Length: 542
Image (cartoon, rainbow, N blue to C red; front, side, top):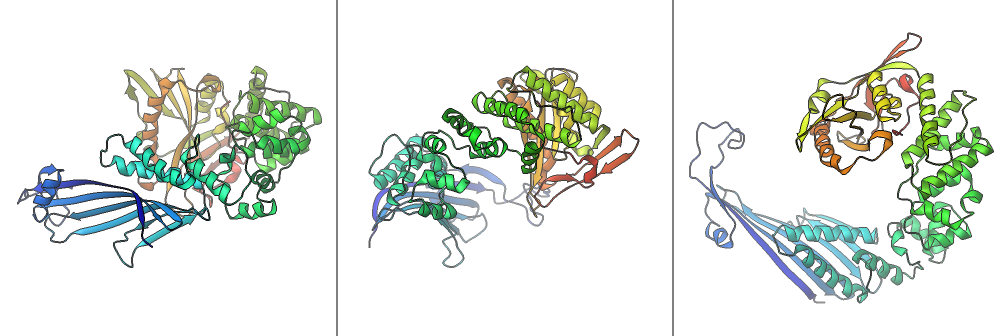
């Protein structure tokens, strides 16, 4: 059966480097010498097809032809969008050429509604090539990724109106699949086509469920007569008539928020009002909390306290006056104080107002008292050499890596946050970024967190929190200075190396403790001597 080509576009570019017939000697520079032979000295670089053809066999020239071919083709009941990548090159001094071929594809079976996407790598080899293919998995997301690859492949050839050409190719392909459905993104149109072909019953907000269709979820679909909302509820072990009604109209699926609220307060409280359920699922910020804290809260809290906590949880979802980390910290503080046997601690806050912030700081101070001790973090010199004073827009910025209790306490006092309790958390590195002077109170408290890929020397260091005074968000004037700071901090994990550090603690009773750090089996940095700070939690800076 022959292929019916609906669209074809060939893009090419050429690269030619002319070299001298001699090299300067002696030469030791790495960019001119490989340790055995000197490299060719370049005269000029050309980029025309004429230059490529002229110097194709010239041994004093490096030549490369880049070709990208974009094709939409029909074959039987299948339609495919393919991108072929080809490089044809020869290095100076070599008589042979090297050919490399790769291909990315996105294929739809129009009859059965199945989707296939993947790639062929090095398929110029008849045997030693790599084939990757997936089917009916994350259809929306997979096509969006394919679209980015398509646009990048076009932009490499300096094509005018690259975005418009990309959209036109995608439109031609998707129109051929679904006949031209309007008012939806390309990915959503393909997902809708899949749902229709598989006779799956879906609501108007069906696109929210696009990343759920996998092996386990398909099994549940069969048990619910192919109803996607009922399958979602069954998959997450949640139920309720009002909940089911809301899930047909929500704009987001923050099920983590709902499930944790369910464990804390029960279905009767959560499902009593549709608008609350809607706010919980529409909230863009997740509320994560450990299972042990969930269990202990129900053990320690009175009914009156639980009602107040429920009002705070409602405020978090309805008004977003506080974020998920802060709410999580508040539960953690409450449980830690209860575990210490503090019978006077009582949950009183019901919203994110001043009374909440004051309660939060009071609990933080109490915890500091229970865990009282003088902490000292010991970093290698490399940490301090990487972050230096810098200038941006004629303003000087002074980053400082916090290392001891005094510095953490001072930062907490100036910023009105509880970063003082963060010194004992091993994966968190705190930098105070100050504007104009080393002692300026115009500053940001910045947390970086380090992790490691399990069983591999691959480290990840990312900025997870950035707070101005009173836990507020920094203004846009800080964006570029923060990017500069990020680039400095990344030197801590340069070349996939990270130097662990130590913690010394002098307890109130005079006992001195010391611990190294190491990465556990999950890639998290922990104290080797866990007893040095066994109440470490993921905290925030409220």
